[in-house]
Length: 162
Image (cartoon, rainbow, N blue to C red; front, side, top):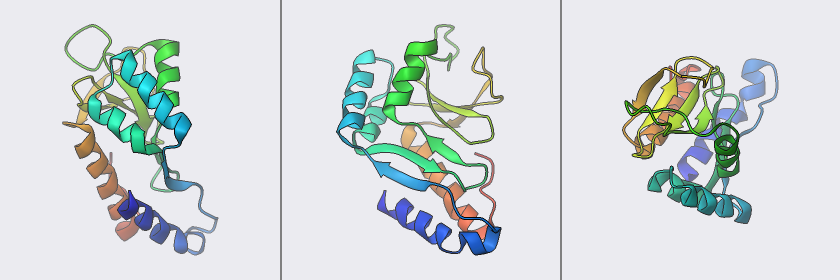
């Protein structure tokens, strides 16, 4: 977390001079008591992989509004709300719903994590019968890809396509 937080600080130092407007929210927010309680509720729902629960035990959310179109990892409470409102998203060959929407790329595509931990990206903004592309074999790899997008953005002003 500290490595990414430092990179976000570096990115925002000259942001306004480079882009002509002040930076938005660009942070990795540590989990507070409410976030940790939501993570425990998410664990009890039984559809979240263990590494996602562990993540939410220490990270409240990630908001990188100015990295490309933005990258967002939703707080556990939002994941729970999404689960309550629309159930989960089909994220495997199994026709039963199985994935949780955990964030988005700011360009209308959502990130979905399957119970086994694989992270997918929707091809469109719609979560109704979404078409998914595998992004990472697990949450750790997905977070590494996010960090690489941030590093690339700082160096080139382009995050790539994640």
